[in-house]
Image (cartoon, rainbow, N blue to C red; front, side, top):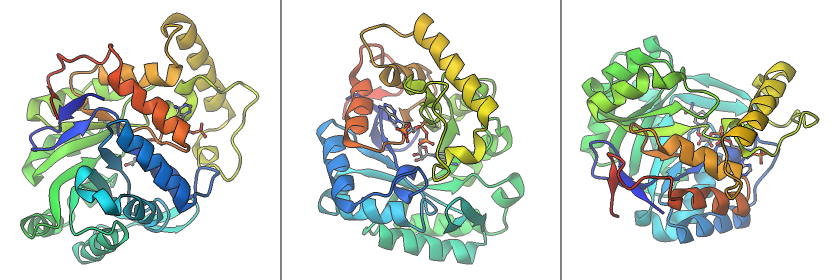
Length: 308
Ligand SMILES: NC(=O)c1ccc[n+]([C@@H]2O[C@H](COP(=O)([O-])OP(=O)(O)OC[C@H]3O[C@@H](n4cnc5c(N)ncnc54)[C@H](OP(=O)(O)O)[C@@H]3O)[C@@H](O)[C@H]2O)c1
């Protein structure tokens, strides 16, 4: 596994981290604690130390699974979670950035994660008005001073949200989380260059294009109604993504690397990107994704490269 410094923070993160939306029950699978424990054991064995979760992957459900899985070695992990969404039911949440409600959400996340600090607390993809909620960032700064949060970050909703990215340092946010993958390169235009300018850490989310860049889907594979992907990927989008992935596999992916690993390493080539956070559903996916973190194509000359 290779490591990079997370922007201006003192944190050193594995280039491949664990995305954990999947534990919330919206990806056509319900998890048991034993399987989650095995996934984190495999992640740790492979050198991973970064976890991305959120308040609304289930009602703090993903955080609960993680808390129980890493309780015995909490200090070995860098845990990133988020605030601002309230989960109600599968595929249903609303947003709240009222500082008093966010304090409660922070306490709920700490409890679920069985910890007394969060390494990275990220604004969860609210719009620009929500971003400017009076008192929000001041309240968060107090939680940093109190030691409940180590660093603040912003997970931008649109991958072209330059407004929030430009304001990051002014609200003491040290990271940006953004969609970036071989099928969606919009953040290359403005957001990623702005991250370099401010020396922000970048967590690249959806690095497998929701699974399409694993190369395993065929035109016959439609998503089940219990799979969140059925909510926003209609047939046109699905077929388009599958056809693009087939072309990429033919023209760009070398034969000796599984396509998912190639796709993660492709994201990690960008000078702005600190880590990829692929969502995982099985121990095998954890192991395979982690293996991308030691590919030769992941350069040791990257501007954020560091020793652990
Ligand atoms: N607004 C936000 O802040 C926000 C939004 C979205 C995501 N995120 C974060 O980013 C993470 C990653 O995004 P994502 O999970 O939406 O998309 P993703 O990482 O692009 O795709 C994840 C899916 O790809 C498939 N997959 C994973 N590893 C694989 C492998 N080695 N081989 C074959 N298939 C594999 C799995 O689904 P199947 O096996 O079922 O295909 C998995 O559910 C999330 O888990 C979450 O932590 C944050």
